[in-house]
Each structure stands twice: as structure tokens, then as C-alpha cells.
Image (cartoon, rainbow, N blue to C red; front, side, top):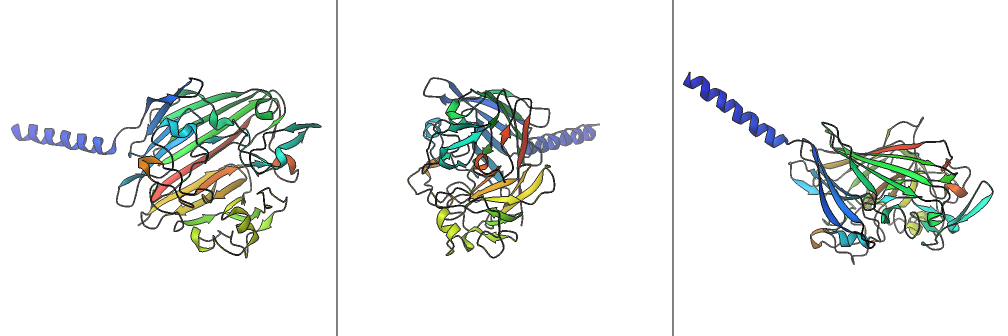
Length: 377
């Protein structure tokens, strides 16, 4: 009898140890700071059963941290950012933010829609970049816990009023971040409008899979499922062409280290100061496809990017210059991270041959992007 009791107790302790090791999925909310006009900014931390952790603030829908294990099980934060909210109030590199109303660039800060010309803020070499002077990344979004039993999630909503940053229509946007048991950060975008407008939503996280602040990203090995890209001019506006990646430094159809060709004597590399280009993804329909895969050799961490969008902006932190001190005081020098911004093409409102970014009343915009993390030996 005593032996049976001891065995039962031992099994109970073993079960408890396994449970604690695996953890439990959940969401925690904490105060993070206040905006310049006094609105509260909160931090929502999503954790899954295997211990992966993602922190998101409702200010700008910003991904503040992503903590994932390496091949030996050691966790590290793999996105650039700041330890406190004040850093995000002056977040000029767009670390982790939710970009809108129009991500990427619009030429000469203007476009014509239904016969009317709209003028935007010219905040990037005479062009409009990432929604203007006060884009979606500089507003406090309304947030609610949208978790299910196994999947922690936070839903963010924002009403962009007619005329905000020059864009037409009252646009109602909803973005949901969820963390799956498969170590996937899933981002679901949705929007409606009461007047025809243009829309291009994306996330602007800067990744370094060795860990944020751990040197440059040049040894990361990248594969992008794209046969072509949209070449740009000297101000990074697409020329309107679709150019084959074959024979260019932008050919990532086979796994290639970021640093292998990043300084090639090529006009496109010169214009971007490295990689800052939109890739035309190989797709047959609007479903979720694998767009890119990135491996970091020293840690074994792998990032897969899946999306329903037609394009992917691959950016290699070319404009970082070592003046920013991020988390734990770490310095972020040039090319110390990369971005994989799923999107429609830059300047689509002025390029009728590109997939349209127009959203009309009665239509429902919806897209999904998944950042899936794993390891290799």
C-alpha cells in the first residue's frame, strides 16, 4: 500500500515537472507608457506552451520582442527594438511597427483615384513613405484579448479618418496577432472603407536570428520564392517593370548568404545601398504560400515567412548607422538585421499594371502573414 502511494506521488511529481517545463499558453497585459497626448500604451505578452514569447504594444501595433530557442534550447530575442516605451516614441527606423495606411513608397507623394488627385506628405526624397508623417505606427490602437484556449491573441483596431495624412475615406482597420503552438506568429489584417481609397498594410520587424544586437546579419542564408522583382530608380521608386532575378544579385531562388552579393557592382544594389527591393512572389492564387526561408548558421534558428500577399520587400538594414542603442544598450550598426515585409507592390496607385491596392466601399480587405520559427542542427 505504501509502495503504491509512493509510486502515485512520484508519477504526480513527474507530471507536474513536465507540465512546468512545457508551460501554458497565455496572454499578459502590462502598462508600457503614455503617448505624447496622454493615451495609455500597454504591452501584451503572448506565450505558447513551448515557451516562445512575443510582446506587442498597442502603440503602432509594434512587435517589441520575439523570444525563440536556438538548436540547444537557449532562448534569445530576435528582433531589434527598445527596452522602454520612450524609444518607440522616436522610432525613426520603424522597428517592429504596423505600417499603414500605405506601406512602402508612393512616387512624388501623390496619386490619382476616381479622377481626383490626392497629395500626401513627402517624407522620403520627395516621395511618401510608410503612411506619411503620422502613419498607423504613431497611433494608439484599441486592443482586446482575442485568445482561445490554446492560442493567445491580441486584436487591435483603429479608425483612420477621411483625409488623415491625405488619404480618402474613413478606414476601419483590424489587425490580430496570434501565437500558435507551432511557434508561429500569425498576423491577420482586415479593413473596410466608406470611400474608395488605397491600402497596403505590413509589419516592419527587423530580424537577427543570432539575437538582437549580435553582430551583422550577413551570414544569414536566405531563400525567396520569386522569379522576378520590381527594379527601382535612384529614389527607390519602381520603374514599372518586372525583371527576372536570373543573373542578378537579387537571385535568392537557391539559399544564399545575405553578404554573398550585397556589395555587387550592380545599379540596383547601388540604389538600395544593399537589398531594399520588392520581390514578385511565385503564386497561382491568393492563398497562404511560403514566401521566404532564412537560416542563421551559428544558432540554427530558422524563420519561414508565409503570406497571402503578392510581394515581399527584402531590406537589409542599410540605413542603420550605429547611432541607435537598442535593448540592453546594444548598438545597431549597418546591416545588423533584415526585414521581410509582406505587401502589395510599392507605388501601385501610380502603376496600373501592378496588382491594385484600391479598396472600395462594400469590399472587405483581408490578408494573412505568418512568421514561423524552428531550428536545424
